[in-house]
Amino acid sequence: MALQAFTHPDLEAGRLLYVGIAPRYMANRISTQNLRKRVRYHYRGNAAGSTLRLTLGCLLGLELRRVGSGKRMTFGKLGEATLSQWMADNARVCWIEQSEPWDLESQLISQLDLLLNLDQNRHNAFHGRLKELRAQARERARELPISS
Image (cartoon, rainbow, N blue to C red; front, side, top):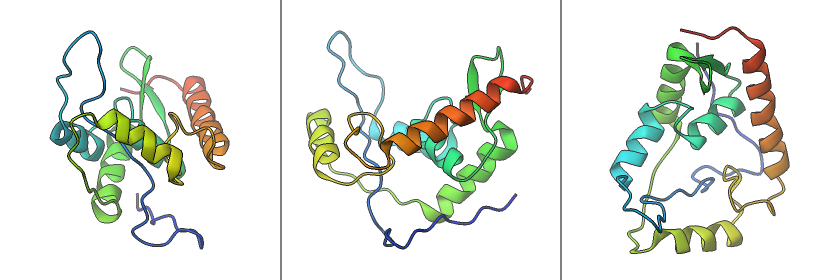
């Protein structure tokens, strides 16, 4: 399965489309996540554990499937491998060190046009369409048999 990079005339190459943080704010315990673990999971994990992977896979037209007990949803082994390769070829990562990254994340989402962020981003013009696209993928997955 080959995927093309999605392009749009309004999206210049190298444009920031998503902001994520590690660790996340946890008032009642210490996070076990760090930036390295989160980036690695985004690039090599699956859609059940990465909202970025879920979003990209849906935008690229990969088929979301229920797996295991049927509660988790991924793009299956082939789809997740295809997405990982697509990300290796097309997605880039940069970072900024911050002692409280959740504050900067909120500022960036409120001030920038970040098409792929859903949380805290209802003001974005693409928010409703992206939410709908992901909901449709989940609905289709619920109609299909559980994948092994």
